[in-house]
Image (cartoon, rainbow, N blue to C red; front, side, top):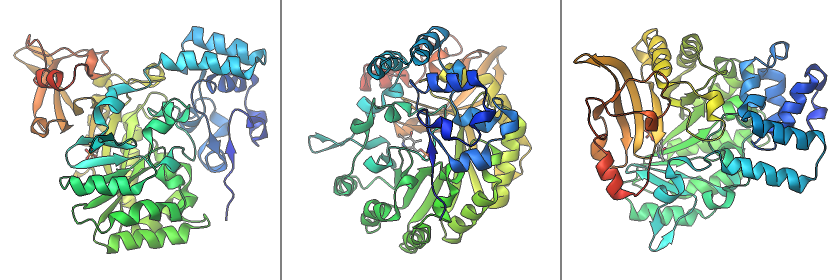
Length: 435
Ligand SMILES: *Cc1c(COP(=O)(O)O)cnc(C)c1O
């Protein structure tokens, strides 16, 4: 057993590396942590971060808040409050004002994707694409550590918590019984792997008897943030046995592993976790956004995908950072992202080309930036849905005017003088406001 120990803005002075961190950096961390979630743990600080290279170290940038994540005037405002040791309520109220201006609910997730059972809205479920549903267990609305770029930051800042989560698996089962088209149940959070094996059993076992469910996916960052979950935690062996049981039931069990940087899957702890998970028959697929300061180079992606292939992890998605929270600090424009993707992709053998991206998860669907090309003398982005609200849109190509600085679908204009993208009219009829 290895004890999990977390560090937040409140107890950061207990970090063994505390003295290595410059005073102004500590102050910046405490300041930004009033607005965005901050938590690391003893695995991250001891095995992932290169303390000789802070603050530039990508794993430090990934887990410790940076001053530039806030607009300068917001930073100054919170900085003054933190420095003067202001009243907690005042700090909280000022932070909330800033949070509410950071687009805390992008892509209309709450309004558009919450399904109904009879008349009742089913909170903690999202059914956006015909074949799959997302389920947010109440107990999984935290992570072993937080990523600075997290697009679900409002859940960890007390803005969304209750509305997004559910603890009644019988509702999930009832919903699936009425929706035989759903093949994949995706457990997400937070991180479902923060739950005990007993809790995971509570949520997952009832699904094993449902004929229409073919795949159980678990979205998790635990291979990076706490690989002991699969090796040395008290109920790790029990977890491995449970994974074996899921596989034996005939379901496909897929761990959707969030890996941002090759270093995360190089440690002996992570390697051992991967080995144990794969020994159960579960498959690990990897996905991550491309973000500035963490993984914005083709070499990092090539290295990461090669490592994953070697370990039997299947590269799955490269995402673009959603338009929320500290997006501006982390964003990589579409043109640069597709350049990085293509560069790394071309270095892979066919086995690594299971990965798709860069992908924008936006209100109409998941849109891949396929390439930059020229058609009739016009420089354009070639775009394609890999998932869409209307399944008929999937795999359709469409084009937008090239724009070097665009970083999201709503920065784009349809190419060839079209007034709108092909899906916009129907999307507008379905929903009054979107994108
Ligand atoms: C990404 C996503 C899925 C899963 O899509 P896949 O392409 O099958 O991985 C399901 N539901 C929502 C809401 C999503 O954003």
